[in-house]
Length: 397
Image 1 (tube, rainbow, N blue to C red):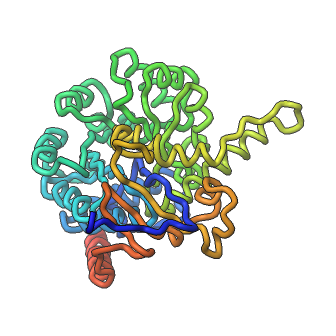
Image 2: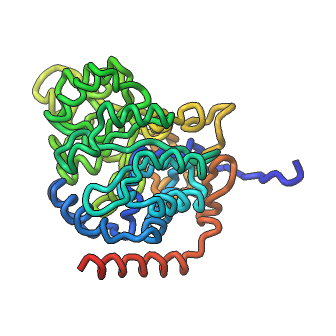
């Protein structure tokens, strides 16, 4: 074809695009606002009770667009936006439009806010969103919580929301899956037939062996948040990769909340790789037992193919396979921090970072070229983000 783009990939590694299975994108103006948050309660009180209620629809747009552009810049071609500040149809419309405007492969997982006033349009409004915005790069899911401990029974997954998801024809992403209460809920969901491949349980730290048995038996998917679990200290604070693998579930990976965490998938892969291998060796230290360690290939698989499957897009993206969409990265392997190229997977997982991503394709369209995001006015973006942040800070005060 005369108009084809020829890309010289000499000295690079070409990989599938990364897939983020869970990020609260609307919070991006609040990045690193609380870098040393010590527990879930601190996050909930500050962000969900304090800042979320003062967000305007425009603030939803600005935060979500910033998160999505950052995702693309760091090689994430698919992002599930766990949009749990859907106060009105306008709030949801602006969040969805932000995904569309960036060109990311977006999954809008809609949930009502935890606290404050809202229009009670959720979950029924997801049908309208699909009708008006769905297609090609944008899909939808229902977002819920595991139990009623944080925000009451209205947001907790169960028969009502499972039926709503079935009626809408969408999957379900369940956040705040922690500990004994979530373990009991999982067994109840199993008894009621509410688990399966179209359900994703997020975090899943501190679950009982019987809960994990139910997850494995039903083929339910898992989204791990390695840095969130470890840094914030969610339940056991140990990402549940060993538990997932033990029941035959290969998890996806996620960023979670940028108010306290890094924004890129390289950090998630490295954190999980390090934590699991430390845990494996420590568990058998002083014995002759061989530790069961995951590999760099494992975490790259979690960040790509398994993430796509977790988001319900395994037949669309996640691997460099004929018939799938062209969501891929070209990563420079001759930069000062990646040269020389001795092992491609090891270089991507342990050596590279966002500065090494030369080119990003999403559905065959170039979104980053020669190390620069395309069609983004950084000065205007910076001004919009600053103005939105200042409004949020003033309104909360």
